[in-house]
Image (cartoon, rainbow, N blue to C red):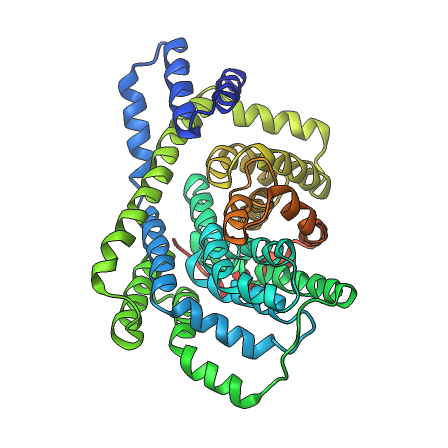
Length: 427
């Protein structure tokens, strides 16, 4: 069954079919071969999307839309400029810090690339950055948005593996900060050699003015993370609170978009949510087929026959995920691979919360690599550069991301200590 599934899936990719359709075709073929009524496929697909935590996805997507249109993202970028604009690298450092702020609210790498890139790239060009350099910094920093909570990929991992989404969110804080710091160090070094990125003298008054303008926006991640840690609400409920709060300050306080713009935001959110849910519905059917055919259990035994060393196993799995990221987008890769790989890593004592964060990060690198890197294509459009130019400019940042990945593999406690300390429970 596994080989039938993989054969149909990669054939669909080769033909250019949407991955959700490829999963659906594979499910029907596997049902016919197994002589299983097609009605069971419908039951399993409904079970896959009939999940309360899934409500967090459209709400967080809509939060990102409101942030971009309502002035929240712009104010966060201005605060980032006042905070780190004096560091060598100038606006490059600002773009990375802004992505850490923005990613900590939207949970989407693609939204981060589009929002911060459109604001930062023109100004970075004026400060001496070439178009590929400016685009590379804004594009690579978007991976922070899928690690620092809230994170849509972590929500999907929690759903398909029945892992606490709240604990996944808390576990993503330290790795997200590590990624941001690593990218800032790389930008500092590159600016030292290249001379791009004018700095601006640190002014306490400017920082205070930027903080006063953005403090309401900064309250949003505090509400989300603080509420989850404090047990006030779950990660799913936090998405609703985040949306209500962002709408309130955008419509009442900042007043930078009209309520009629909400209709277009709702349409875009519904389209993206529909794509995710269709994918998840068919992936649930595939996971059910593989489970009843003992595929996960067989894979566990075969991997244990090779090695039971957690570090070596994580290196093998990381290499596999990097390869998958080259040919598959993050969302389908997460819903397909997570149910198969999680039993393998947990069989050698690896915490599923840790593995969820690591898996989201590794697959997030795939968003930045050709030929299917979604963020690459968005970056090329926003920065008006070719794919070849952008990939060449991103080479030092690829190395940085791999170094961070190795550190996380070598020291799992960096990921797990915070959720263990806060003892967060629930979804």
